[in-house]
Image 1 (cartoon, rainbow, N blue to C red):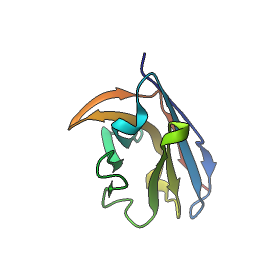
Image 2: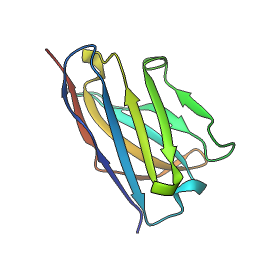
Image 3: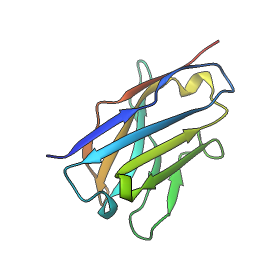
Image 4: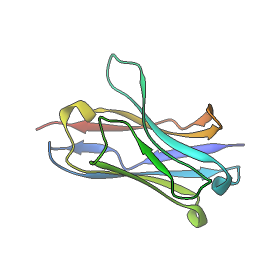
Length: 118
């Protein structure tokens, strides 16, 4: 059974930083493209960042987070990360990690809440 478990969310002041983690199990983590998605209160699901399995290390970011967020993975630990710096109030959302098969989302975690407020 594919499982994705996010952690690391919380309350942070504007300008602060957080690192989210997503531990994967039930599949060969290194073989899959992975992404972070988010859903802000009252809004739809938004793609935030992606990391390809092949070629290794290829990363993608939405314009809203480019230059502030960094996605990475540790295949040995089956873990996906999202380092978030210079957080803004508009980054407040539930953040999900997701497994992708090509362009299709094939699994998603339960999410972790990130709240940016003073």
